[in-house]
Length: 314
Image (cartoon, rainbow, N blue to C red; front, side, top):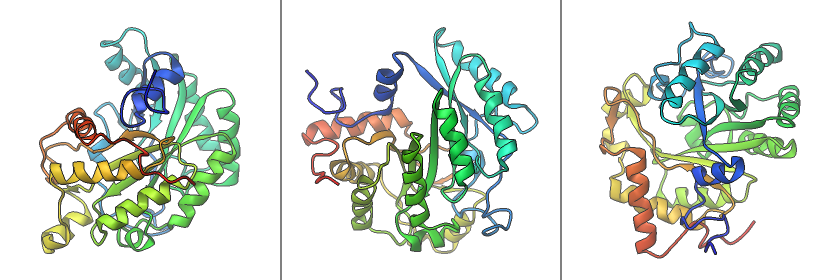
């Protein structure tokens, strides 16, 4: 019998295990760049984008604005099918804010993806202020027949940090967006950064409590990274002392404490972010995602602790 409530022997509610249980098979996301922008880039809520963001750090090579959604899916599926002959796919609208367009345009893009053979659903990365009731109603209809997840860039629960990053939205807007997806039976994921300048360990552990009180289904965490070509890089060059970078050991200890406070029902998809070596300034750990996760699992075992051990309930 499994020791933990999420149905596996892992000491946290891991994403791959959750997907295997949900779909009874292997599922892979295929990233798509559909040419979106963001309201803090085009002047609607600001200019310049988020201070930490260089979109090149998370866009695979097959993503290309000159290629259609179908072409990008075909290339991504061809790549992954070499490893596994039997696999299901989710079209991952990843770059920038993928609900920031008129509904007519969104319908064409999403439905082109869902019409592709092997695609069983969508993962749509966006900002919490880029959803309207009309778009949510449409996603609710899609969710009746497909797996639909909206992945929100929340980044921090502190409005002071959101303002420094030039996010252009508040944490209260994030809460609204999360609650609206749940109300419509649309899956959600919250994306958060640990290590933002001006925040403390007490803030990050309080964040775990705040997120645990919300109807968050999936969670992506990652350490603050400084990338070339960003406003934060220029700020880092001018005042590096304001950007204390985690060591691997320090971040592992923080993540353990964070997990202990986290609602055990929340599925954790990621703990760290990887960026192309030529774009990464700091911290330079030289670790792959799976290598960090192995270290984390070892530390959780050594401390005999687990996700939700100190969770006190909503």
